[in-house]
Image 1 (cartoon, rainbow over the protein chains, first blue to last red):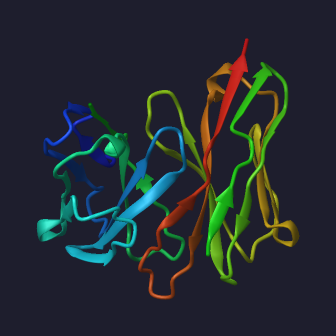
Image 2: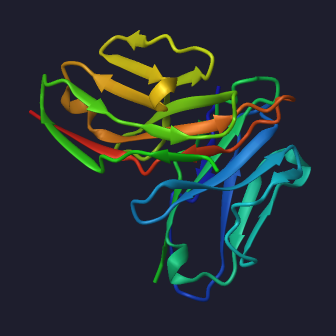
Length: 115
Length: 118
């Protein structure tokens, strides 16, 4: 069974540009999460989808970040325009709805560098 | 508010030493889950263990063991006879237990970077 995949693995862009990150969850997982780790700090929650609906977007830093999950399959996270402080590693995770213990499976992350 | 603290930023040991990674958490929930994840140099987060708040039994898996103590809000992780392959960043995390399996977010600690030298 394929795990969570993320694309690209690395992205280097200039301040003011737009970047779109993609996450493909494990097949059959309705929960999809985005997290971010900035400069060696803790991994912080960004938002949570249940199928195509946003269940919790309390961690989204500002309106420069837009997440979508059309059709309840893969998700994209767009940063527009990117700022220097957006640099970090963006992780995606997925889990099944029908588990009480919420084991989340993580992708390898996308390392974003904003110059 | 929920919070996880991993006070040790970096630990360096020599192979075969035992090492304990500390994790202290804060939550007002009576039901919750605690996790440990490993992030090797390759970058992905690898699930190691899950413990629910009603199960305070310690767990051992090979060279890994976990000590959960509700009285001190701690969930410490010990690696016995460490090996070079154990070098990684280790994250402790907390999640609330939602009634309808909606899958709550994980609250992570800052991570502890473990370096095991030969």
